[in-house]
Length: 217
Ligand code: ADP
Image 1 (tube, rainbow, N blue to C red):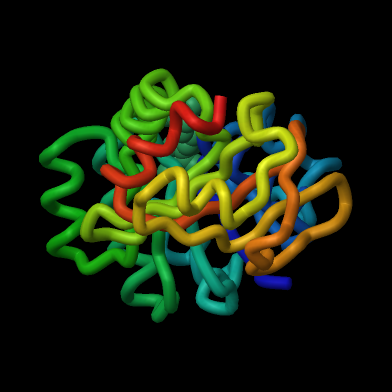
Image 2 (cartoon, rainbow, N blue to C red):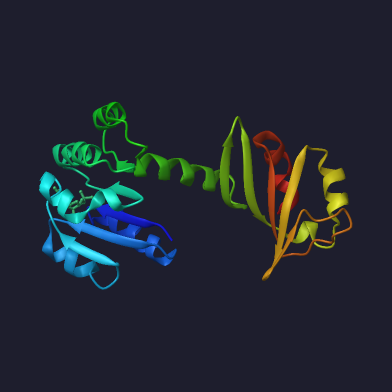
């Protein structure tokens, strides 16, 4: 279980905080707004009213003891940057920051934060990919055009063995696992018979995965 602090409990910060709690982590939420802090007080490990542009607030909160601090201050560029400078000088190990503009991004990268997040752009890309490949439930990009994708087995593949599927596809793809209800079959053998509603987790080049996508519908 990691310890996270989330600065700014607007839509982005509160969604991230609540999800971290769901995933079993400890979360300190910080905001200048008493209303927001009260709103989330019962749902987070701790929720504190503080202004993080004040260096003393950062020391009092002991933010240097957290594994990761996520700065989710939206529109107020000055507050976001000042907070990052304070977190850096307090010795916080890992800092992730939500950026709202190119200028914000440029300054944050000069300050050496660990990850800069552009929620709208990143979500836009994911939505476009989801629209373009509706059969893909989820994916991870591994870089260099390699992806891991999660796909539901449709009727076309019902009763087909892994070997038949791989031979028919004529593509260099790997079946990492097949999930059937609560059972996970890691690296299924060639004789494994697939059924509708199984979930396949495949790895391969995007082009190869695109080619086999119609087989899975
Ligand atoms: P979102 O688009 O995620 O809703 P907002 O800009 O509305 O983004 O939310 C940012 C949050 O950060 C607000 O709740 C605001 O009160 C909080 N915030 C802004 N400045 C500070 C600060 N100096 N210290 C702590 N919280 C701050």
